[in-house]
Image 1: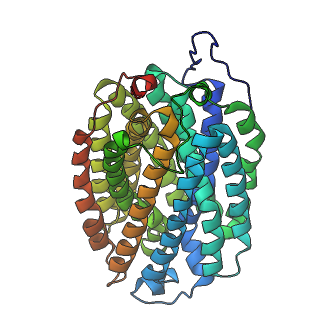
Image 2: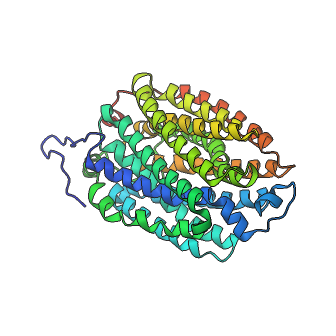
Image 3: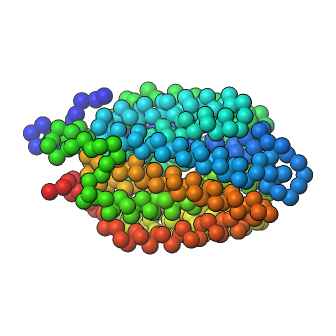
Amino acid sequence: MDSPTFDPVDNTPRLHRWNDRVVIGAVLASFASGFGQFGVVTALGDVARTFGHLVHGATLADQAGLSGTKLGVGLAIIRLASLGGLPLTALADRFGRHRMLVLSVGLGLCATILAAASPGYWWFVVIFALGRPLLSATNALSEVIAAEQTDTSSRAKALALVAAGYGVGAGLTAIIHSLASKTLGFRGLFLLAVVPLALLPLINRWATEPDRFALAERTSKHVGPALGAVRAQFRRHLILLSIVAFALSFITGPANSFIFLYAQNIDHLSGVTTALMVVGAGATGLVGLLLGRAMADHFGRRVTGALGMTGLALFGVLSYSGPKYALVIGYVMGVMFGSIFAPAGGALVNELFPTSVRASASGWFLAAGVLGAVTGLVMFGAIADIGNRFALAAALTFLPAMFVAALFWALPETKSRELEDLLPT
């Protein structure tokens, strides 16, 4: 770990630009997290065919190999395992962001590689679930490091870059699987996690400990919290953000997890078309990140977050409405609105809490998202099983959750504020 670089006289932390090496190190960790986690989504159809039984019929189980309920429960277990990301992330408030980041990304990718050897569906679920909390903690800690290493003029840009890193990692798995699924299968795809694992030395060297944490640790204001504990004065904000996280993941959990199974096994998109859809989503995702960063800095975190969440729900419904063109349009536009949300949502989570509990707050935001995703996956899968009604499942799952976006106006606006403004008096 690098030695602290803050000025010992006035205890001023050295801050970095959004494109400095310390932020790029966090981006590489986020890329590795996206590559490791998203494989289960892109290869879900292949997993179902490998461990299920395909027949000519009208039900989801006939066309996919496994029932929607079985797939939904399996995905829910994997998502539920991410609750382990809360204590892992909270430990960064005690032992440092850098140490926990390197540990989480390394062990998480190793578990992903091990999942390639799964002998059956439930074995696959259990093994993959072992790595999920580690990679979820990696993503949360990447955002914490990016936020703490930058000032208010660079923070939204840095968080957008971290989100882009995750998106590139996730998109690569989708493109590789779409073009080479018959050659690689899901096993070969998971074995490719050795590539981001090779980035671990760079992550270790570049994503150094933020001066803000080193400074807080040396002052009397920094009190190591009980694991995941957040002081009473910050709990109202934490509860509101947790409700938003629950509703957001209630949408994105099933919207993202079933999309490639739906494209490949139900709508029967070709591998090339699916790959082109992912490439198009990458382009709209980049546009969304640029828009989201600019809007978060100019119009505020709240309005940008609400807009992104609303667009995600509406285009998620369009994706599952039936026609192939609706699937493509809904997916690429949904990615854009998710990217609009990312800089604003990430900024709020980090700007509403002081350094001493920031990682713990991020852990609770992660945990609430896990519970939302699990609930959404089970509900979506159960409804989709009834006559293969994906459109109905999307409408009943996504639209009610969309209205939770109104809670953004119950939170304070944090644009143009430095993290030091949040130190308790």
